[in-house]
Image (tube, rainbow, N blue to C red; front, side, top):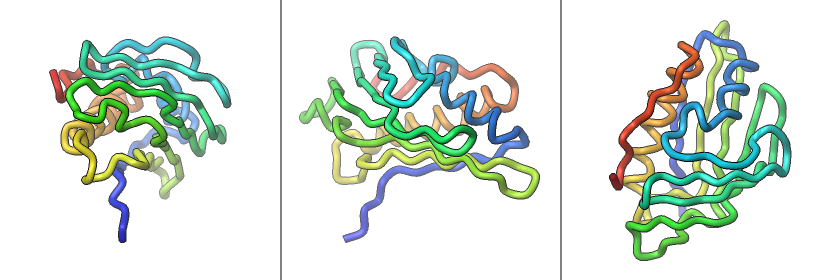
Length: 150
């Protein structure tokens, strides 16, 4: 059986270092409240979006200017029957050069069509990566977005 984890990609003119630095400051592009550290391997941080979503992430892989992976170690999605759908999933940012541009491939491994929040969560991730993170990378300022579930 093929797994259809959520993935989206952006291509920018900025360097891999600039993309890496932007990813590692989710408070500047992920709409909601971030607490904790996102600077080095094994750092942990929490994310909260209103009363709809809470999750705690640990940085489990970090290769400067190439890759960052967060493991979701706790989650509470208050609009799904299984509130812990994200727990145990991984959020991956892979950065590579493509000609004179930089490609960011975002994947949420475990966010698959079979889970209840797939549609709303994948729509939110699409907005966050393609609009807010893209804006942060290309203009220096992320966007505050109204996300699904609101």
